[in-house]
Image (cartoon, rainbow, N blue to C red; front, top):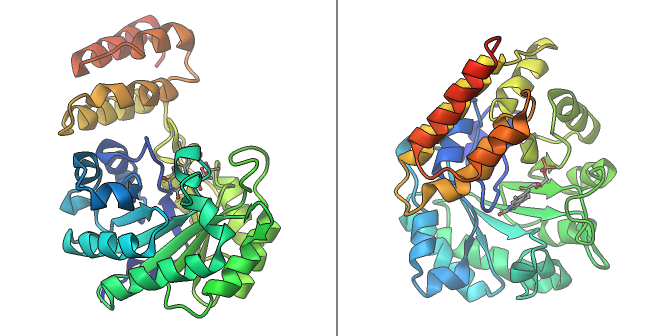
Length: 322
Ligand SMILES: Cc1cc2nc3c(=O)[nH]c(=O)nc-3n(C[C@H](O)[C@H](O)[C@H](O)COP(=O)(O)O)c2cc1C
């Protein structure tokens, strides 16, 4: 079995799975900037069971994206087994199980981080996925610091003996899912409890923070998420910083060029309305330019590649120093 978790050089630096964000275009742009792994948006095992077209769309990828790992969410071990079989048949390079999502539509149905409320079920879910993919695909898991009274250390003790390739931990708890500093002590403790790879998530918004997180926790890698918003080059910067202590900063002209590349990738996506998702993403690229609000107001209404190109042209003309 090929196993990207084991085969790739360490530390692993990659873009974390993000629902509503890591579509084909997003993945392709971060791949250009050296993301070691890619994840499509997570997919519901229930939706897969009912043959939803949306799931098929979410699980569409291109060979150039390898290694690419599908992430599943849900609560029923049997449906996890069935979904993992499909992931294997689709040729993914791994299957990841979501034990971290706090979103009501996921957690209220017993999935995501709510699974931590029943550690026996967590084990059953992982075993069902392992039984489905056998030695053909590596199985990994992603979770967060805690769910109500259940701490990730209890989860670690439950899963430590299973043949899992990697645990990624987002260092924030269910009650404050995305706010405040990530709990690096908790990630460090998990790293010590787990015999397989552990990757950190939640404190990688800059190269300096990513290095600090890796050094402090002793983790085998770091998954970066919101730090890549409007900065898909973050992973390249982190890798450079780890290797040399310094890193390249794109000029405003390079930022606009990357924004256009991203827009072109989105326009090639085989979805009905690729520009709905791309609108907010385009706005992130121009955060630091003069009069950003004025251009963002236009970007939230674009429906074609040409309209995005026109806004970029306007920025270039009105700010000749770019
Ligand atoms: C918009 C958004 C969507 C996310 N979707 C997922 C998801 O589908 N699966 C998952 O495991 N984590 C998901 N996460 C969590 C991230 O993978 C990551 O663990 C978290 O954002 C912390 O990293 P950061 O501080 O670098 O953003 C999502 C985060 C955001 C902001």
